[in-house]
Amino acid sequence: MTRAAAGFGVALVLTLALASPAAAADPDAGLDDAERGRLNEADEAFRYQDYERTIALLRPLLDSGHIQDPGELRRAREHLGASYWFADAKDAARLVFSLLLKDRPDYRLDPLYYPPELIRFFEDEKQRLTDAGLIGDTGPDTVLRGPRRTLVTTVTERRLPAIAYLMPFGVGQFANGDRSKGAAVAVLQGIGLALNVGTWLGVEALKRGKTNSIAAADEGRAQLLRALWWAGTGMATASWIYSVADGFANRPPRTKVEQRWELVDPEDLPTPRESSRTLRPTTGPTALGLGLSGDF
Image 1: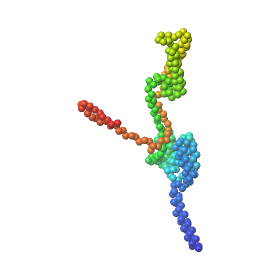
Image 2: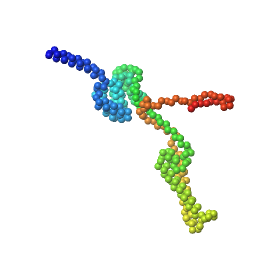
Image 3: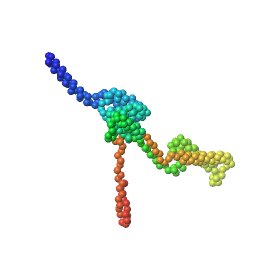
Image 4: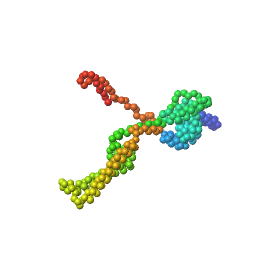
């Protein structure tokens, strides 16, 4: 019984000794399901530029030391350092970046993903650590794949010709994006035009036969209609003049340029289309001289 127990104990020790390296070699052994979920949430928060939440999720994960995969550890430190920088916590960002660079001295941030100011901050920290002898000389560039923080420039061209601003009913205001003013101008011109046409028809209805004369009994009504005609004509004309002047005065520039930072994944960008346009020389239409024909 003693020999059997001793043999069992030796076998148990050997089994544990052989199993321990295999468990330690597993890169995900340090993260449980909850921590893995928080790491994924941190990546998502960083993607949507929620830097405060990224810091709150990554800091305890990195402090625990449970992130054992080297790639995940470097990415987490990069995101945490960048989040500190965007949150204007430069000292904390410098500390996290120093840990990242001590682990991988040749590490570089993607210049298409981050603004130039952050790239300079990171490179300055790398140079400081190099000068202090804390890290060695940097080697080849190391760039992570994935979405990049890119400066997107949007150029908008306005194709509305200048002659369109001469049109009535607030076209110029609507073209400039001022809908309320355009609606007011359109209503005033509509009322003026309705008075103009309605009073003219009223005066014509008071005329007798082919003489175009108005009976003395209807003269007072005719004068009122003529006054309203002038009022309607003046309202329509004045509102049109104002619409034209205001439209040209507030006309935006023909080309509008907007710049903003966005997360762009290069893999999602459309590939450049190859031009199918070709030109080739041919004989002229009368078999004299040369011409050009093309496929577009």
